[in-house]
Length: 463
Image 1 (cartoon, helix red, strand yellow):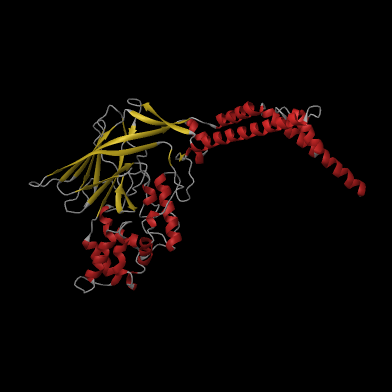
Image 2: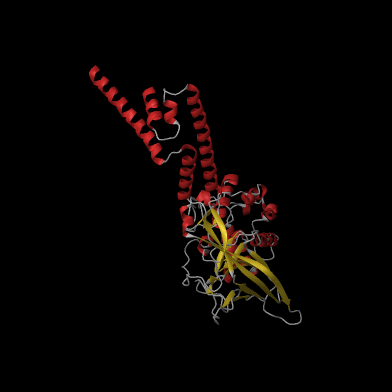
């Protein structure tokens, strides 16, 4: 070992090593060279560590770019939810499930329960408390019951998917107006954290209340808008009654997640035309961003999926998966409005009350990183025109304002720059390079090789 150390100090090209190993100079001079070598090593390691922290914490930067007139942009996605309650269908369900007919004392009790069930959302699960100890309600299939009550608004007489906006009892239609395109779009029924809804989201399959039996959309590409179009969107719910209707405006490649800034919520009242001016905020990313490790750039692309229950990555889907796992951990069951994930067990009334008690929706999902490339919609202005003297069909008008400038995520400190920084620090303070360390490694390997040969010879001599 002494021979190895002496060889390294004599022949290595790191500045100061050879002077420490020399015996023809004064001891004080060798000590001074040792102190200088220690200081240089400390400064070199400190600088390399700081550069690594910079690479780890801030490898990317946001810059402004001009995008007006250079791209097409997607329209917003719309999800419509209501508290519609089909009383005739509710009577049929009450008679079928509990053998109670109209006029029976318990009929109003069960009808009230069904009305509470229709209005169940993530933040009002405690409204089920009065029914917690009712044995007759313990094994009720919540999702199927909600669907059966409102199935008339989702399917036509043949039971197949429909293009809403026809002569159905309860429907929505959307009209896009980029270039006089007045065709309706397809709304799909979904079960969400805010109840049973309609949506234009392309991720509808993950919230399909009937499971994964639905036919895929024929129009698989989102409708696009250019800066030279009038990017207006008209949503018309064909409902004459006073049912509450709430519209959620979001990215059409996302699902509804309540209480976040990227989802615009607007209630559409009877005899009211609501106008919402929406602006699009764009964050794009250079291709080089993919070369930076995910933990360092702190964002993901859609094909960098690490989710168990979904085939694509979106932050909202990640948070849904996180909340499913939290529910299973806290109360050993999954809420009925999550159709993905484990098949069971599905929460009964006591399970839902357990979730409400433990504030399961406030679960921290820090592992859910944002997208590297994002389209965000922000409401600029909201107005409403109410017609009290005459009866008008309620409508939602969305005016999309396209941006002139966007934000681009760029790499400012890549891995090759990190290697160059390491080399610069070592060269500045120690006067060495990559080959200097390779030389030391070579001497160590050579030493180990000689030791192994000696041990091998000794072993065969004994035997």
